[in-house]
Image (tube, rainbow, N blue to C red; front, side, top):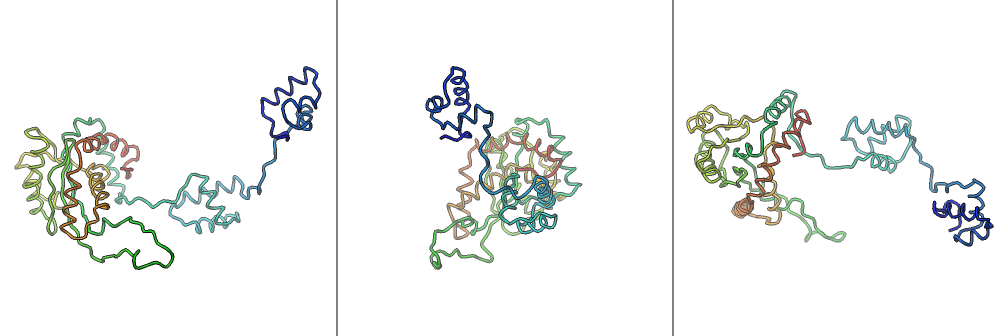
Length: 332
């Protein structure tokens, strides 16, 4: 070291002290291990920081603010679109500069999450529903038996898999695609105490077939998870669920049904269980329908009561998230 810009605050203090003691600049420079010119500049008050190296920044703060407005106007624009609009506003830059500025603003290019479309009426209903349930405790949510259907495909276990291959190496590294992979629709239920038995659905679900599912799978689930205790049943607003005959079935059996806002999978914790099962299928990689069913049952059986309780305990946070988002979809 030897340049003035390299002097630390401690070195500068030592220089001032030694100068007061009557030491010469040469003695001071030898004492602290810097050049005599650095000592001289500091004592004369001409010490300045080292100039920044590298090319001067090619955009101004005003130009950067313009880019931010362009990005926030439409988050789905490509880098080329951003550059084109920024150029039209009077800022000539390269794609690399646009990318760096967007990164500096904190934006990252990500695959967008897919959420149900919610119009204003549905958002308002979600908000009203969440406000009504805002003060429900975890104990109250533990009385709810959540249910849902989900579709599983044999090709799902191969999604996301990557392959190590050399340039031009093909036959051994291809992943086959199937236009119509074998699939199965599954009904399940869960509460804070754990999960109930699964039902593999054959054909389309109508009111009559759904009531069969309730009779042979929902009631056993409630018996397993609640025993003789009262519970509240939850399901979404699918046509088979909201049919008049289905409503009469619940009335005849004396079961309370939780009112539920439309298009709100983010409020149903069983959706997280489906996701857990599908992630486990990636390791199983079933090839036939029988293998798929066996893998689903094994994954479902491995879900612990602790996992279910943690999901139910998230309900107050989900409610608050809906209220904070004013009815819009949340991260859940």
